[in-house]
Image 1 (cartoon, each protein chain N blue to C red):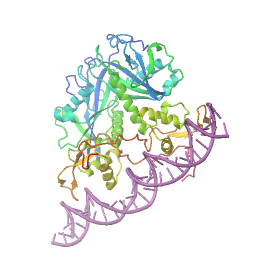
Image 2: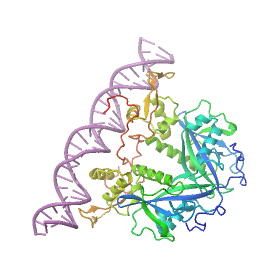
Image 3: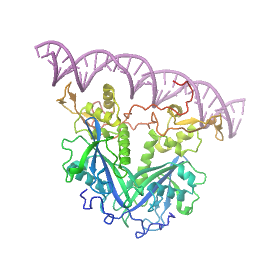
Image 4: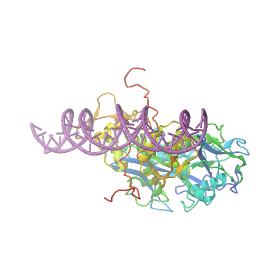
Length: 254
Length: 254
DNA sequence: CCCTTTATAGTCAGAGTGACTATTAAAAAA
DNA sequence: TTTTTTAATAGTCACTCTGACTATAAAGGG
């Protein structure tokens, strides 16, 4: 540790940073992945949209700060916020990411089912859901954070039961499939999806009686709830973007 | 953002934090996963071993700080450090993780081939490789960080070409298999491993001529180098820890 | 020269997968 | 009411991938 800073670091000689959390809160709505954004009321980036977030307070962890901000932004009760899936993504530390001062930000992703009332929180006036992809350029490095968050979520659908976090407590396999198709941006074969999901032990479990969801058009679907596992064996791999080597090993051009 | 801190945060009214990086530097040696640790010379945790790390300086990113620390600890040239794989793991923010002050630490994992001369850096006296698992309790929350790092590396071997980072530029499939077996702590069937690796497009490519590694006992092995891909399709899944549901759906006890 | 060691080739049954077709149960249209 | 439409679910089939093997090849040690 020959950094100029004394080894064991002297508490009075450290470079001061501010630490914030930024939240990428996702939901699946209208066959599109949506993210919760807030409009900035002042410079820098006044009028631009940004991920919700805020300071980590002196006596809380970043996880606690993220849950606190999430409760404030979404208006969800502390019970709901306490149980939902919150995942630390990565930390963004570019020295110039905030033009005013040195701020490092710990980014989180949160997944919500499509809520009937999006948020009822305090300063909800300037907050709304945006379809990812149709957001303009965001404030700070939030475009980058959002892109990273999308990538991470898409990847984790393959080998975790994360998709159920987008669904209500009881859901149909069609709804679950909709989540996969929306996040991955692909269409999946329905019978095959069904077979694969049901073949993963502990992914979903049928709701006991024969209750079925009605309201839609066709045959009513059976209801399931999330099973006991968090990791999927075998994984649900997304359709391969077939690899083409840059230097063809052999064979003719098509 | 109704946190008590003014929206858009006033640069003069933020809770001050120190930001550090901690490095989990791994190598595979003697059929065991090893990690680079440094011995602490002063309190707190004097005499305990810890992950190398240090402050993020005012004008550098955490990535830059991690590479700088890595160069200092390993004695590798800046060229080698500049190209090697450095992966941000997660950020540790417990308010009490450092008894002296509020420090958040961005943890990184780095992978090195087994170097003939471990490190030649400056204060290398108190740094050495430890087989993971035989480290005593480490300073701060470094046991937790190390465990998280091991988990992450093991998981990424499944679907990325990360294992080649543990190998020299040219390596045999036996050496690559050794990496998988060591990190996962399992034994793999050699012909099957070979078939799967060669079936992943872009994972490894044979070194052109018929050069072969000699020195060992048996038949000399062909040499390969890392191919062009970073992600593995299909993935090399580790042997399943077969899932047993807590409430047996049906059937008799064995 | 034989034996051990390691790399590599090949076999084979079973599981998993993509692309289908068929059937069922409901709502909407006629 | 009957027919049509829609969606869920069941099932088929060829193909691939996988784990568990056996067989052969090429080196060094005794």
